[in-house]
Amino acid sequence: MEAFPPHPCARAVALEKIGLYKAPHISDITPIQIPPHYEYIEVLTGGRVSFETEVGPREFGCGTIFWHLPGDHTIHENNPEDPYRCLVLLFKNSEDPARRVPHWTLWERENEALVFAEEILRGYCDSSLDREVLGAYAYARLFWQAYSYSHRKPDLALPLPLRKMRLIIDQSFAANLSILDIAAHAKVSVSHLHALCRRHLQPSPHQQLLMRRLQEACRLLISSEAPIKNICKDCGFANVECFCRSFHIKFGTTPGEYRRQHSHDPFHS
Image 1 (tube, helix red, strand yellow):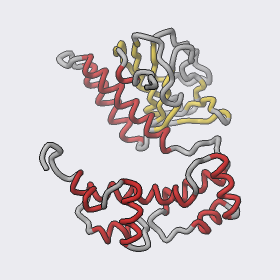
Image 2: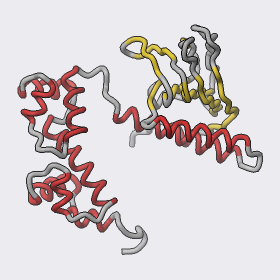
Image 3: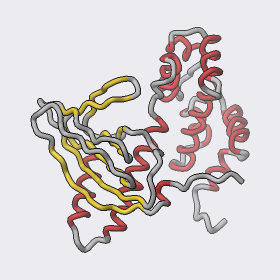
Image 4: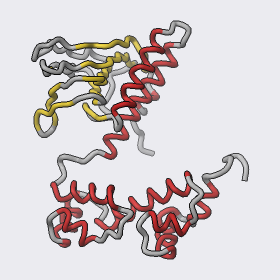
């Protein structure tokens, strides 16, 4: 069996320091280079900072997570008219960490990043709390935010028509959306859209639309008591028969059985 590297949260990761940094009203801040065995995470809580991305420099604001590994430099290209502020967390590893999430990611909701920063600072200043537990929670929460964003964010390396395709599928999957509609939104022909998918993505446009509808169906089956026919309609399926057939092909069970499997105590039938 193929051996996989250990999951980052399974390594010995120790929280060494937490603090807040407020940049002065100058353009360039002297950066810090991260030493071996350390991970340095900066969560912007205000202001603006410029950072070099895969497509050139970009300005970032509140809710951005910068995850620095050994050899990286901390953020430093400050906006003097709106200096950045950030929560900083320093973790030490038992070994040099590999990059498991992108260098920068965004918190989906800025206010949640601010709530997290306040929660972590309050916990860090409370001497009655276990620092090891606090560190494990902070690391896992940040890793989840970075991972989930990297999973859903547009891949800037993809051609623009494919990014447009993914956006309209994510936003309009519940509508009566056809592949012709998607191609028109992406400003390419249907045949060209299929060709781009074959070249850059494995799933076809139809498969990606179907997967997004099924993803939402799973969420509704677990989180609501809505009738199957309502969920079918809310997820964009033409009829219940089509929905149930697609669901069974993907998950090997019916929507009703899926709901039963995920709506009770897992230790009791």
